Image (cartoon, rainbow, N blue to C red; front, side, top):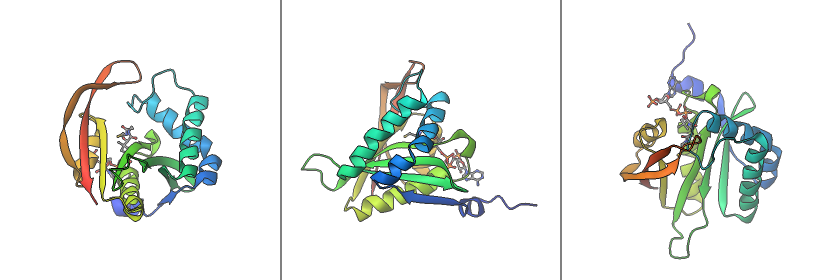
Length: 182
Ligand SMILES: CC(C)(COP(=O)(O)OP(=O)(O)OC[C@H]1O[C@@H](n2cnc3c(N)ncnc32)[C@H](O)[C@@H]1OP(=O)(O)O)[C@@H](O)C(=O)NCCC(=O)NCCS
């Protein structure tokens, strides 16, 4: 019988930090993951209807920030296919040079529950540390899969902000704020 422990599956997943050129080269793959997450109802900044072109434009803006050095972009590949991504916002006010923000942790629905997000977060934290960051913060939809993930990965839960954002269908959702020292 095939061994499906998280470790054996994770070995097939490659996490890479993308520079601006690679981000442009991977625009379609990144956009496909974002479109799939929004179609699945994830509250990740966008409202329905949300097209592949909308998502490409969103990642073109991210690639521009990667070029400027104000944002880190990582991608997860399974057998060469881009299946997940996460960003770290590096550019924060001058009195917070040690702080970064995690944004847009996204895993395609077809690739979930294989440890891809856990691997992406491990790499994001390592890359942020390498950039001199010692504190990370993030917010996530309260009661969603991601909340359990962050707790499992040692993030500290600050609290819940009611009605923080909207789901793609326009319904309000609460957000939970987390932080982690690196
Ligand atoms: C939240 C999200 C990123 C998680 O991605 P993921 O790759 O499925 O996450 P992981 O696989 O690391 O962990 C998810 C679950 O799978 C389990 N798992 C991990 N590897 C596994 C394996 N090999 N076999 C079975 N289960 C496994 C984990 O234990 C975890 O279980 P739990 O949810 O019951 O706690 C994904 O659901 C997503 O993209 N959601 C939409 C966007 C979103 O909400 N992003 C967060 C914004 S802050």
